[in-house]
Image (cartoon, rainbow, N blue to C red):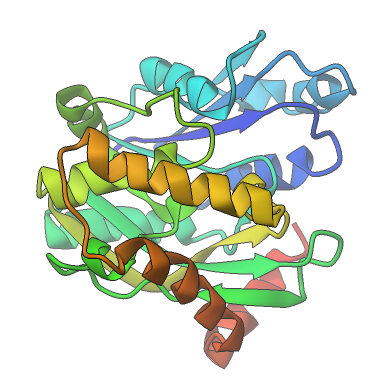
Length: 264
């Protein structure tokens, strides 16, 4: 099973090397790595080119935002399974991709996802939030649930069948896509109860109250464009579930496995 990993980046020379190195450190051999740079002007491209001989595809040109860049990557991907790792993020351990592949093989699923840690931007050893995704059920989205997007892997044939990201959404296109695949089209999925990704805090959808309000409006739009009807509390339960993540702590055994990876 060939896996394609796509990283989209624009003017992020500070952290892009962490993302790239965490992909290159994966122990899974059948890996295609695609980097889509939006025409960075801060030296990001120069950092990326240091790894160019280990990157399968590198594109650097202006785009129309994050989800347009991810769609470009989807068109270039040749893997059986596709995942995304954003420029601020990193895989939590070298076995992350191989564990996802094993989940696909054992469960016979079309999509799979896992758990995620939010960490401080400057000190990724400091945990801010623990996103324990939990197993999916048919009413999960109605209860405000969604899987962590950077941990969400999808078979390429599923994108070909049901489409990619809607670029008219600036914040919640990932939510809309997962809602469309899992809740609307009932694409099969499996949950891997392991932390596979570390995400730095400070993302666009959580940057301010205004951003959070815009994200909530786009969440509502995600249901409407798919002709789906949420419960009256669905869109309020979603941000509330994120607040609960601040009070959860990851298993100690998982944290120990991360220590070795921190040297990469």
